[in-house]
Length: 235
Image 1 (cartoon, rainbow, N blue to C red):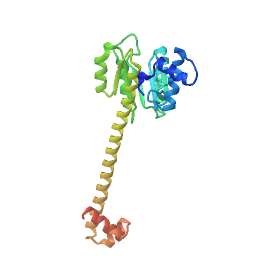
Image 2: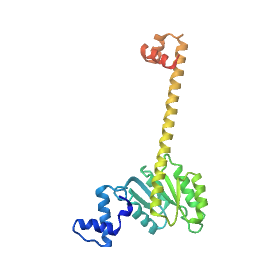
Image 3: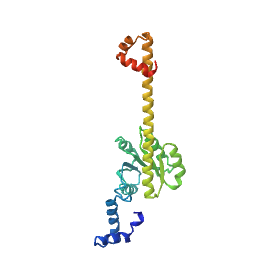
Image 4: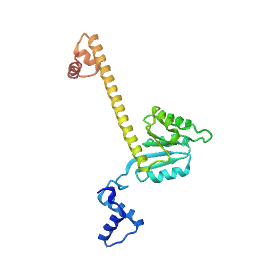
């Protein structure tokens, strides 16, 4: 079943099978019913992502529009019109992506506000993905902002499907990078602990003249455990 199948004519044919007639206004309800019944990918319910999105813009009307659009695709959508409130929201720790406007001070439209708050977000441990919202003329600045840590940008006015796609892509990419960094940190930590243990064993064995019994007593382990560690580290 393709997206083109959901025309008014085709929906009307389906309705006839149930001995019903439909108007153009009812087409979307039939389309929604079909999508949900067959779990079609064009279903808003089927495409729901379990992500928390936070939109930050001083334009209340734009925020309302964003919320209407995004709540069709994301489990949680929050909006704030003052970026200074952002830190309190982020302290909850469950925001996956931020849609950040580039200009809040209308007296100077140089995107410095957006860059300032971008830096504040990226200073946090494990920060969320950031997608910048910018005017067409600010694209060059948005590209520079990506070098400072932004994950993507979208120009106003945006295409709704592209907006959702960019958000999902940014979150998934961000999660992969974070998982890789976490694994690398864990590997480095494990490596450091092994080095410390090996150095401790070498020191005690050297001080006792490799007397296993005395070394085991000093280390607080059994002789068998010490033998295993000597073999493990090739001491």
